Image 1 (cartoon, rainbow, N blue to C red):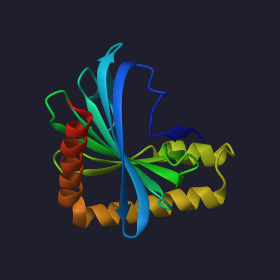
Image 2 (image 1 turned 45 degrees about the vertical axis):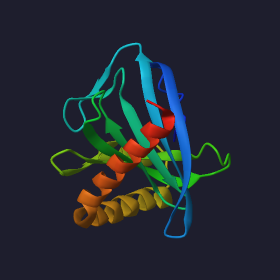
Image 3 (image 1 turned 120 degrees about the vertical axis):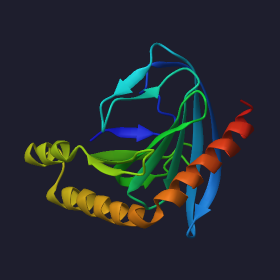
Image 4 (image 1 turned 30 degrees about the vertical axis):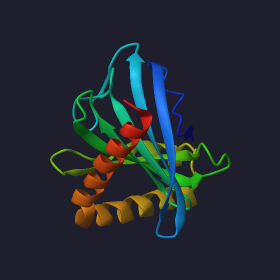
Length: 180
């Protein structure tokens, strides 16, 4: 499993970045949200999941939220004009706050995307299956990932609009805080 953190230093295509963090509370649990603003990139990154879309580019931003004890890590993506691209949910082993300023997670391979047309898509199920077969994840972690994905999809069915609106509001608030 890969460990990722909110700074997203593993995205080497981003050559100059600015980032701002903010604490918040969700249902009585501690959380940290951030806005990663991409000032310069080596080249844009376009992915094919679920369809062809650019997710890294000059002037693009990612809003990430981590809540203590949760098993999902949402990343809302915005283009250089501030237009919503998608919300990408990593299913995690659990969000960690070992460094209170920089939350991290262990990626459990399974992902969920909410597209601008409000479609909910589950991605990388085959990656999770292959990881189980190869012994990279235990049966317990496999079930945990599937259950977290199921709960998230059920929740999103009734809360897509407010989830996207929350991401837009957070984007605007943190962009202003960053001074962009």
